[in-house]
Image (cartoon, rainbow, N blue to C red; front, top):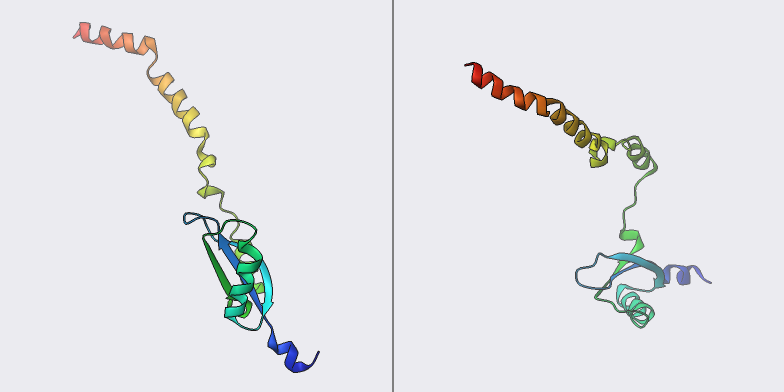
Length: 118
């Protein structure tokens, strides 16, 4: 293939969603000479197989990926357990114990005795 032929095709990424409320999902990559033909190829390859609400075709060179340094910085920020509500599950049990200790039957009955003494 000549050098001119190698530059003729561009790589495109195809995204689609099944319904209006659904999220876009990456489906596949394809080679095409331009956006218009990439869209036609995406529709031909995808829409005849399953229901589709929308298709996006994006030139791969227009997609910005993270650099290795950026990926490394994200891995350092991976300790996010404090954001998960599951980390506070013990509080319900602790609160129940606290309430039981504070408001047991003997204590409530003693309140009546205090009122009588006054």
